[in-house]
Length: 239
Image (tube, one colour):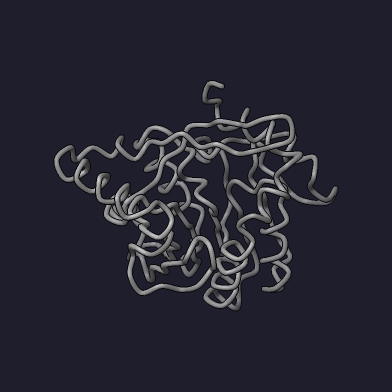
């Protein structure tokens, strides 16, 4: 099956999204717990980018007592699972520039940024996230780590490192993503990041990284080495 546009892929994935999420439940819950622990306690507004069925964002908002929540999701099939009273932006991440607002908390989770192409579009998306943050707001985003040896294996990771060392091309992080759903598989183009790549993009977008968490993709445990998990970033606007 050919690789689909991300929105088309998520339209097909929507009926199985809950089941797919359960396969990574410990990782997803760990990310949510870290956000709830580190987010500003006075946050009154939240924007979630790439919300899917909206459950994770609404759960985070409930735990933080945030009443004003905006969900961004371009897939109509995914949005069909939202509660009726949710405020939504029905645009792609690349179209954030068309929206206005100020948010104390912005989340962009489960490698949503890895479905934005090309690199220049990722930078633009991060610049828009910065624009939408309040002065004391926080952005949390987690990305698939290209050098996660525990998940991808030592040999595969070392080969990636060698290729990157001599190629020095962020396009080498482009991968094919496959989800198993009822009736077959869904394929989409994705991107897995190095820490250096993501951190360079954040700085270029005017974001200050306050903390980088390394989270085991299988167990949700915090790891010390960046080579043992995927990456969650806590950011604010640079001075």
